[in-house]
Length: 87
Image (cartoon, rainbow, N blue to C red; front, side, top):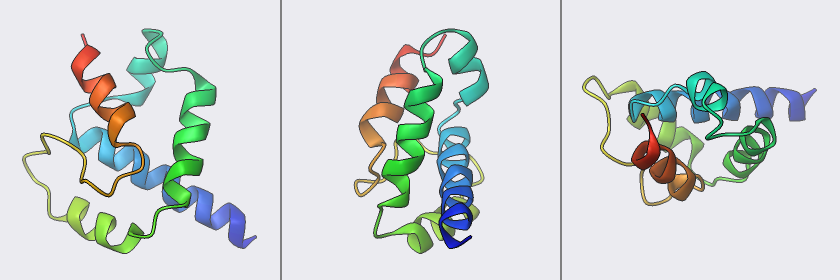
C-alpha cells in the first residue's frame, strides 16, 4: 500500500510541476507530444527524487508559475522539452 501512496504523491507532484510550468499533460498527450508510457516513466523518476518535501513546498508557494523546473527535478529535461514544443 505504501508504494501505491508514493506513486500517487509523485503523480500529483509531476502534474503540479507541469501546471506550474504552464503545461497541461492531458493536452500534451492528445497532441502526441507525450505518450502514456512517458508519463508513467516520469512519475517513476519523480518517485526516486530525494526532494519531494522541498518540491511540494515550492509548488505550494508558486502563484504566477515557474519558468523552469528546479535543478534537482528528475523530469527537468522532459518538462523543458514539452514547454519548448507546446503549441
